[in-house]
Length: 168
Image: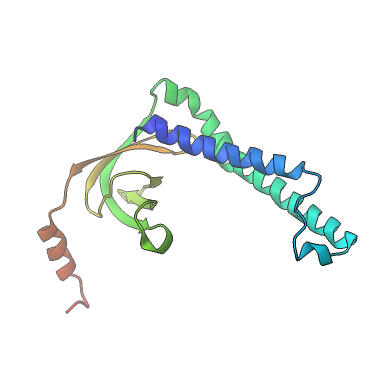
């Protein structure tokens, strides 16, 4: 998936989430009659409605301030191909898998040269010790592309793991 499509997908997803939460607050009845809500008094329904509205507005504000606004500032840089490039060796790496360890959605965190930290989705799987080049946007630090220059052999990984102290 190209960097522009990844950016557009995530930007529209979070912007849509912020807009949907605001629109949900405007509903007159926040929940339909169900078995549980039929037993509630009017005072309870009003309190629960206000709690839901406050939560939805807080969610919209947080999504807007921390995700949508920085990504909006990056749109001119994305359209003019002004990316920031960082090259180096991966010094730490973590992979977070999706639900029950499935591979359809995973998040990767990596540190390059013990200085630059990146989190990205939809990218190639990298390993600790690889030499990579990362292209990202300045405001949101959204990773557009990860290029791997030096691939580690399986024998190199096994030999470095066997040298660790405490392993049999």
